[in-house]
Length: 286
Ligand code: C2E
Ligand code: MG
Ligand code: MG
Ligand code: MG
Image (cartoon, rainbow, N blue to C red; front, side, top):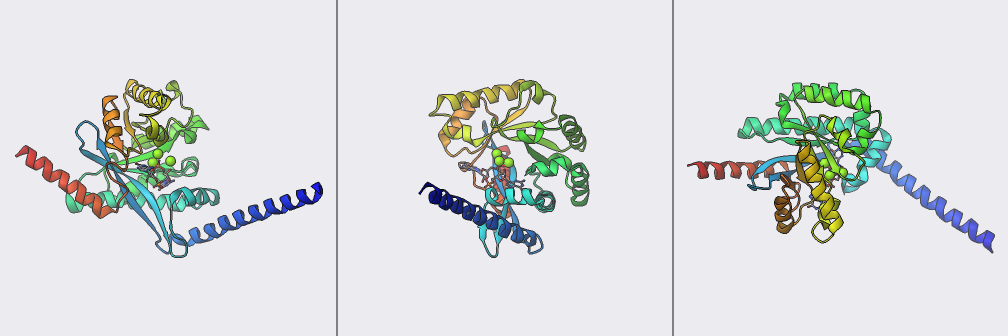
């Protein structure tokens, strides 16, 4: 009967929901120990200048090597870490580790490699971000100009005055700021103009189909023009083919990041790539 069917459906949904809630809870419990157990690490993905192909910097991407769950992708655990507030200590760890690494590249190899760090909305909303950034820079001795913080449009939508004030203070430290996944939110030109950001990162969902799909192609072109009219640098994310790189270069996009130029990789691999860049430059100069 309909009644029995309804009951069965209801039970199915509650079981589904329970299982889902249980999995999240389980992940949360494991995340709670992950910092102490040193289960986090950072990989770094290269960014290149589209005209010259020259390596410019890297984005730090968080990896969780869980003893129980194996390698967990950030898309799965970052939302759980945000929900539970654990993103606060984890985010600070990411910031410190990225700055420590950039300083080590500087000291050990003489390489100035700018590094981008992703922020979560919670880190931005809870008042202590500026102090944390200042403290980490002080502690690691990294030049502030080598650090870039990546924000998303949705983080900037609420509480605009407080957000602006925080951004101004971060810029005053000499730290760079970019807007990640650009195009997926609702930023207007006039709003962007008032923000002290230095770079826009075009979301990879537009880049993926920009050659085949006219709408996506138009969006990418519009973002490039908008960035340039605001005197911002623009970088395309998720560039997987040489053809996409050439298309972007033709359209005047400044920079690119994606599997075509390099996957996220351990710090040692980054050092090797940049060391080779140095040799190439010296060979060209000599
Ligand atoms: P995101 O910041 O937009 O990072 C770019 C993502 O695209 C990374 O995924 C990267 O591995 C992937 N990617 C790069 N090139 C390509 C490509 O050519 N093709 C494709 N299909 N993908 C590419 P990942 O590392 O899985 O990170 C996913 C998201 O998790 C990040 O997106 C970011 O929003 C978040 N995330 C990563 N690390 C952190 C962190 O330390 N803190 C916070 N709050 N979020 C982080
Ligand atoms: Mg990012
Ligand atoms: Mg992105
Ligand atoms: Mg993202």
